[in-house]
Length: 194
Image 1: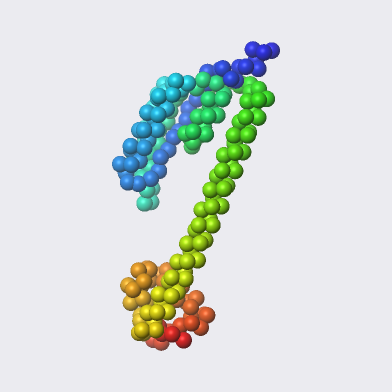
Image 2: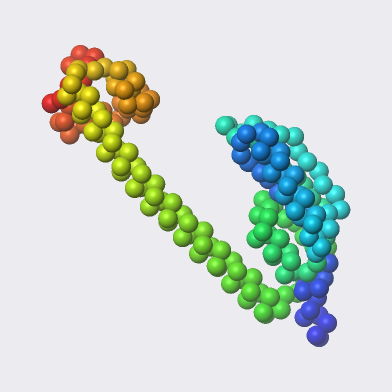
């Protein structure tokens, strides 16, 4: 019975996994995926049996590349650690057909998972707060820039776009809001203070 309970801890696990890198410039993505694989190769508890790289693909403004690995990992603890450390986009356990985890292994896995989820949640909340702060202040700066410009002279949307550095399409939405608030008014193709 003790032998069965330790199986997951010490079993060699063969799996297929895909690791993706997305970013820019193109050269960064190529270097990053190669460094990732070199780092995996340095780990004595992981053995890469095969690696199959995709072609570099442009995805919008970013570049993407992935590698499919066929590898052997020493034990469930290392398998879980591999998932947390390398964040593969998919993982398929090929062998053995069944793994047994001890209660402490499962508890450690769940606690690690919870800790990482809480950390990600904290980062998301912090970034949202920073984003809200920046958006609020950017709106205030843009509001003041438009009001100062229009106090000096009547300006068209094109001229306001050039002065503020904001694209006409985005600026137009902001200006519509100022018109609804009766802070500015449109006369023909130009804007002035209300």
